Amino acid sequence: MAQRPRPVRGATENPLSSRFNLPARAADGDWLDAREAVDGAPPRLRTSVTVEHPRTIITRNQSPDIPFDRSINPYRGCEHGCIYCFARPSHAFHDLSPGLDFESKLFAKPDAATLLRAELGKRGYACAPIALGTNTDPYQPIERDWRITRAVLEVLAACRHPFTITTKSDRVLRDLDLIAPMAADGLAAVALSITTLDAKTAMTLEPRAPTPQRRLAAVRALAEAGVPTYVSIAPVIPAITDHELEAILSAAAGAGARGAFYLPVRLPWEVAPLFKAWLAEHFPDRAGKVMAIIQSLRDGRDNDPDFFSRMRGSGAWAGLLRTRFGIACRKLGLGNARITLRTDLFRPPAGPQGELF
Image 1 (spheres, rainbow, N blue to C red):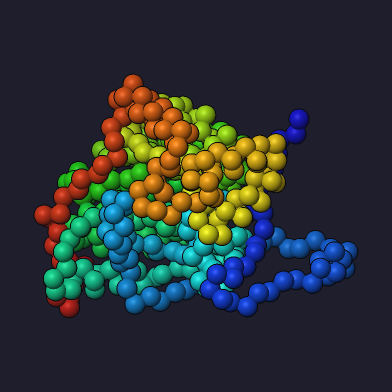
Image 2: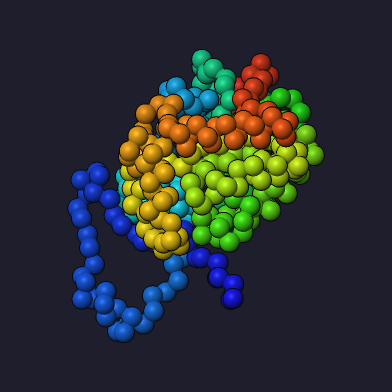
């Protein structure tokens, strides 16, 4: 049997959202039918990057079920193309599709480090850990050239400001020279997201993210460098990846992870129809079963937006998942993912001349 080619993108379609009362647009059906005959095959979808100049860079939240109150996202959109990404709906606000546009029409914030320095220097700033990678991945492929995440880490390191990183990329190892010394002082921790160990599943689920084995290698390298490292099994997808839960935890423990956490798949807003279309394309034999279990987790809906239950799910399947996770972690000696970092070492930028920089 021939090996299936690696998918170019994650989403199988590019629908626009009407949630913000934007005008609906649809291509003419007759033209679509004759498009390839007249114009030939469409060109390969290319990634574009638009520079964004926000006024602030620290995003704050008051969600009671999230263990941090501030975060930084150097990019909007994410080229990794994970079909389940709960950040996809944010592209609708820009009159772009949460589908293919989200993974190919990206926004970069090159002023992030400058903005961060100014915000950390404001009178009355109270230090608390800043989370990177909470919406889109700070180490997605364009970080190789833009290096915005590294510039942010340089500011945090100079100010001795605590931070956490969540990523699917082994590119995080590039910045080990900044992360490891901060971790040695109790100022940094990293979580690698590993949703499957199967390379073929990863090809469709997270088409442009590094392979699971590369991520596990990154866990090992971080742990060996003394960085508190955790594995995020987020999301767990019923009937597609849930059977791998114990195997992922075992691999994480073997690589030196300190702890782990998991989240059942969430399908907010436009993610639900995109996920269903992806199921129909890649797993037609079990699409109905997958959605039935998801709905059993979400009180009969595709998504449960309520605090706390949105992170855990409810019902028998959610209970079984919690039990399996708990038993496996105890057997493997994995701790929980409660990360405690120091805040007493923080040194704000010293005045307009920025003496720390």
